[in-house]
Length: 445
Image (cartoon, rainbow, N blue to C red; front, top):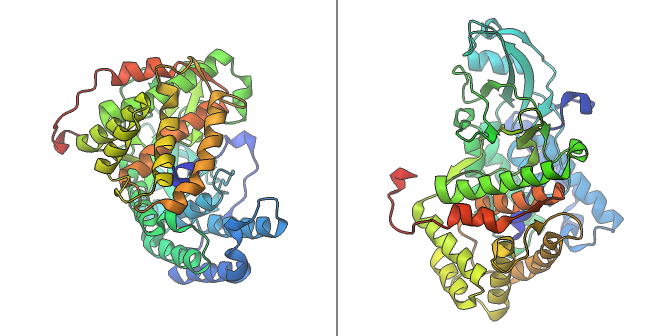
């Protein structure tokens, strides 16, 4: 695992009754955003910023600088918020609902008579994300696919977010590079390029659609949705990683975690298409229907059969404890160059072995997650390996692995938050045992 795999990308906040909303203006013009970046640099001071990641989190000065950086990036949203969350590593960097000039965005996206499609529209957002905010509404019967008035969630993109991605990432790269905030082994250029591509996809709301498994609920999407405004069925449920989990039975927690991990494996090895944002607020548990609602598909990406074949071979070598095969397959995939020293090779193989541990034949099942569990011990060892790999890495990981590892590790982190116990080997065998290696055209992805 690498540092990028610890990134938690913020999603929607808690349900309306659980919080007090505050609005914060999102700078939308290039000049306005540049002004905020300049203010951020001045408030941090490059000298202090360069020490940010070198100091202990118990250092009050470093902590204040860290909070300043994350707070300012959070206000800017979009690409800046993604970097802010990266800087917060595994902290709770959730955005506040922002003033998105709702009427202006709706008018441009749906036309000047957009309100005619709704019986009601709540202008106070009930949730916020990095690139938009969500409003409750009732779709008028004449516009509803059900033929009756329907409760909907309207996801509205912040103004100019799509156009600001490249410039924002450029500003943040300049800030982080000048301040020497990130280690060389993180390969910032490669990380930013992947983020740019993923954010561009997320800014196209028409990508959000899926379905087909009775254990899950996928809300319908109104056909009038656009790239900037997504109108979808309102679904009931509680975030599977939120405060409400304390009221769930252990059986429910185990079942939810098992479903999320199984879905992750199916996305990888059957569909070869994955919703790559593992944030628990994208999964809503409905105790009445015993379904998990899947509410965000903007971060979905497809993988070629060639890549999945190669990545599975690396993981299978790690599962079997074959060090040489793991190194050879990692070379073929592009994880390694062949010029790495033994320290890097050992750290890489060990990290892959740890990632594969829940699925190994000799791992006691059900596998336990949560505090003082098998997974907690693995997580601690992985974290200890990260500085080693950042120091000795010679090439950035394959770009597909950024999102893949984030989702897989995120599924494990969600299971840990649920304090669940899951027979991961059974899930692995159900999905992977019949996997067929071999050529399949990318058109079939």
